[in-house]
Length: 156
Image (cartoon, rainbow, N blue to C red; front, top):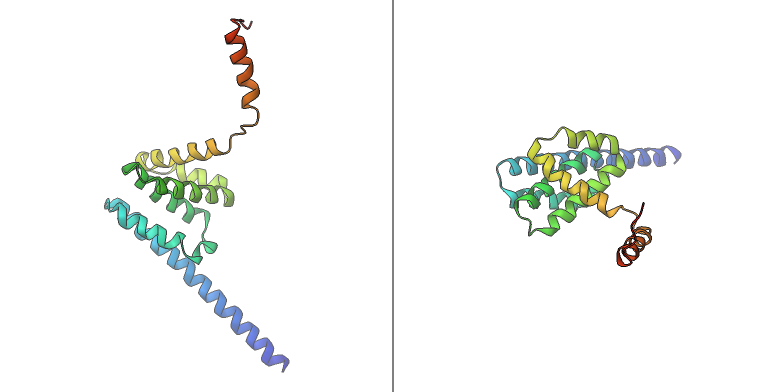
């Protein structure tokens, strides 16, 4: 009975492992296709493919690089249709996740992009930086400036 239980556990582990490898390969293939769609300037298809991956359970297996690729697609789509705020939001979420997984490699990835793609993704980086600014002390600094300006006090 012990051997049967052990064999069942091994079979389940192998099945889960194979499924996980299939999921990883599928994510990679879909993101590659999304990048190709982007090169063909088929922005609707590129977003559809990225959405397919991002709205599936496969995101649990995604790597920092795959998140960067998805962010690149979303950022480029936003660049060509600024009315698509959902693309900027998706790009920001993907890049944030990539930075959480591996910030150094994510920065290298951005640095190796073409100038056009890097420009689009740098907008996302600036958005992320803006979201992480500590705003708790801004009021302290503004009050001094406004008070001094109102009273015509010059700082030396």
